[in-house]
Image (cartoon, rainbow over all chains, first blue to last red):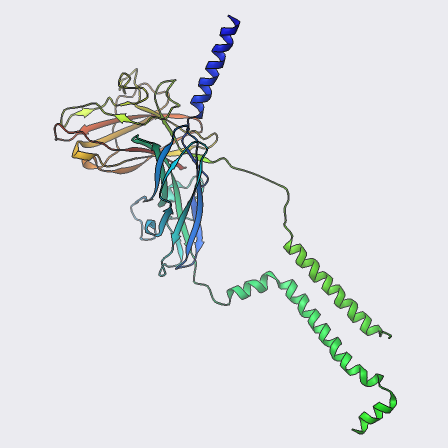
Amino acid sequence: MYKSTILFVLLFSLLFILTSEALATAVDRMSLCDLEVFPGETIDTEITLEGTESEERSGFWYTYYKETEGDDDRMDITSWITVEPKDYTIKQGEIKVFTVKVKIPENAEPGLWGAISEKAGQEGHSAERRTYVIFKDVIIGGNVYSGFLIPVSVNVLKNPNSLVPVFNFVKQNIMTIVLSFVIVILLAMLLLKKNKLPKKNLPKKNQRKLREQ
Amino acid sequence: MRMSLKKFISLTIILALAVTLVTQMAILAADNDAGQSASTAKTTTFLVGGTETGTKDTNLTTITFPEGSPEGTVDAPYNNEDTDSDPQVLSATVSEPVAKIKNTHASTSYNVVLEITTWTNSVVDMEYYNLADDAANDIQTVTDELSNASGAARTVSTGISIAASSYKDLYLKLTLGSVAGKTGTSTLTVLGETS
């Protein structure tokens, strides 16, 4: 009786463990919002998926625009986005890395694209999102998929002034630059003084010679 | 070789400045590691499972609608885990969904977005859904549109979120098209989104 009770408990626990392990797919990013980039540039972001289900799943990535009344042409940036690789299969414990590439057109005006607010990526702001990347997968052979919507928005920056990097460097290293400048000045002063000193230290005979010249 | 006082002071100042400069650069280069750490749990997709205690935590693979008359309604689909012996039931007292959707994340609630692909062979005129509370057993109607006209693809933000480690019940219904003797297919996707 005692043995059969233990066996029952063990089998029941095993059943619980097996059922609670059956999840789906995990992702390490919930949003890709406020990416800052200049016109004509491409920004790459890595996303990883992790298989948590005992059965192999097959899936793919795609882009989605949530069309909403009153939207302007800044909201649909699906044509800017690609995910590589697009298709995947994933097993339990397997981790796969994908690259979301966002290529900003040369003629893109500065400002926010793909969402109506810079807070779109934050919790409680789902209504402000418009452009997404989505992954979805299914147990191979099935027709019921599960997946996740990841909002994407881009803050296109003004084309930079060519002197901006110089200004930034000076700003970041102002103390170093000032100290170096002071050291150089002092060294220069010392050297100049040194060049004058030998005249004084010359023997009187040589000093007279110099004066006659 | 005697060094003048002025020269000595100048050299001392230069040396002091150089030491300050080197120290400052070393501080800037140092890794400001305060020894703290934090981590967040990964986001997980919804589990679309069966409807019984023994099947609701098992991912199902297919949902099947039984055969119906052209232009008729089919409201008793079943999933492969519970099989055709345990189909969806619409009832004022003992309703039962076709699938349960579980948010497997331990601490975050997610919005539910449903998506279907276009039904093939024009067999479906319209598909509907009802996303009900886990405990509800009085679901008699399924009226929210899941497809576009003629069974065309659609993505629907349900406006419903599922709390961490909780379930919602999914009910589905079809109105068939006018074609007879055909079988059609479509895929259903249950997507999650942060609220």
